[in-house]
Length: 245
Image (cartoon, rainbow, N blue to C red; front, side, top):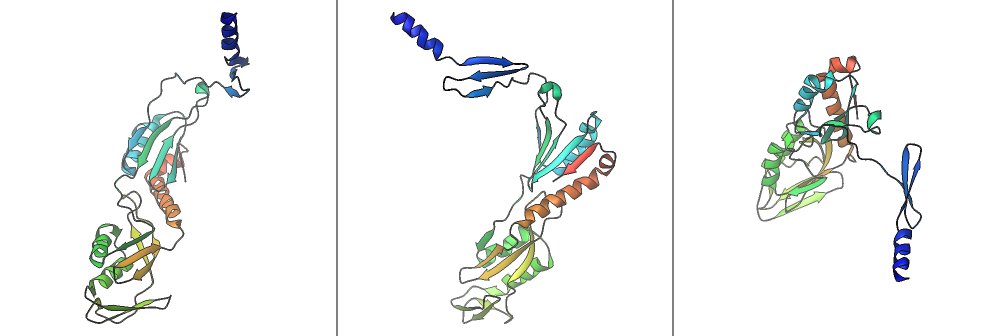
């Protein structure tokens, strides 16, 4: 009796396999129905990781463009580009991603960064593309010297500095509250997207805070898309390659 009870419990605890046409389902003991997805056994290459747009362009031109079906390139983020083909109906519509390029060596810049005056001056030279406002910010920082006392007047629109044997602004002009800068935040082969930054100065240093609501990420993707369209113009024109954000 004990053996029969054990066999009955073991049998009723097993899931039920049900086949409907070409699809197989499993019904668990608690009534949950799940489709059994077979493992794709067709040979397919692994996604090739890349670190530059130049490598992506060369591989698309010399390798992937020889395929019968069109290629698709998307830019899901300012740091990633993917190249893939059409879904394969013989492999349950598996879509092969051939290449994925990632901008891995980008210095980047946070939404709000505060540094000492000298540190920020170094950052402006090493982590930003040169623009008129970057030159202005570097000159501003070079005109400030560290000392013992400083008075800041902040009207909410502009900040001015009056020094007393302390942090000294060599000119008494008001500090511009808004500057447009291009930090390195996407692939370094393309022009970096502009961002509006709010400047704030205090006794500890200076800060740059993003004031564009993160729109630079969309602009970065558009810049990368334009770069790829130019480099693959003939393939795009012949409908061999489609590029989208």
